[in-house]
Length: 518
Image 1: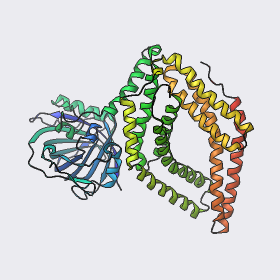
Image 2: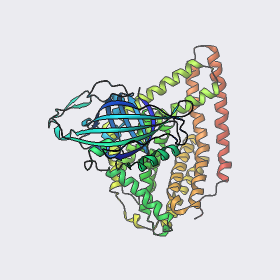
Image 3: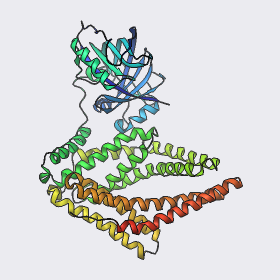
Image 4: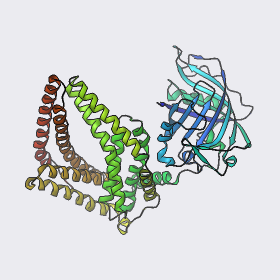
């Protein structure tokens, strides 16, 4: 199991003759521990085209120091990285768990050593009155070697890692200082940095040692840059009073880029079963699919992409539905029918295993490639050139009208549950279509999204109750002891009443919605 923690640090470049300044007297600091010296030996792994480095990700195996092992660092902010660790294991075989967490970026390409770093580290710890570490200051003398030119042309896969034949690589030496925050505050981080700068250090140009060593070879990811640029352009245009000049294409593309970015953000978190990660990744997938449907006149994307997004949402949905049921029933049963709840938890764990398998499929990697392509080279249709402030009201209204039509069909439907489910899907689509337009249309679009969400939620409560009843019906028939059967029966009645109450609230909720008023 990988161990993780949030790393917040600042890096500074220092000359060979740099002297680490005295660090006492800083805010919060009661004592400065005696310096400790460590010899660190690290091998960095990446793909042949440095896909991890292009996204600011580092994967290394390091010996020496107090935290020997495999370290995976993934950016979560300007000065923050999520670090995950695993035991040393085999030198050239990346732990499967860590390799899986970067699979959205490597997409089946082999990981092999691209560089080595030998570091003579002097660590000074800043302590509070109780001896807790507020921050660590690491003065590093680094010797780096770029191994890429020493890799044999023939690369043989061995247990998921590439076997390479290394030749001596030229050395590069430098000195840098890292300040990593422990229990201290950001103010302490700034104060340490100020003292280092006064002593002659400068903020580092690179956020990682690997990036510095491979300077010039690491090209920022074009798809990631395109996603960021799409969102930045829209924010800049709407915040600078240039809203009237924003096109529909720019608005749609920014929303699409945001959802694609969310899929990448929550991919590793979903694999780790982090709280709410599967839900958020599924929502991003659904928003994306809904947008491609609602704005077909703007983005000419093959409908097969929608099918693939539906497949991904389904894989995520199996986990999410079981997760919701487990949490729902655990709260309501309050310890009763514990055996059945454990069965439900086992089903959820099985669903997670199937999800992780799906996220390793070439089909998933192909979908990510396609999504990257849509943002980097958007297939804009003629309607994309229209002024968003004039065009979006009609597009949002059409989505609302489709929802209204679906709602009216409930009254005359032969199968009202199917009609309610269709209305819920239409409500989601109307909500997402309106959310997309908020940066341009403001409060009016926000109100449409809010109203559609209310309809979606009341129908969701009804649907959740129906699904819960079905699970309880099956579970009750398999109950091993009378007390479990009784508890499940009582819960069935509770779910039945909750579903009926939600169903009966639908008409009242609909009457309270305002609808589009552009």
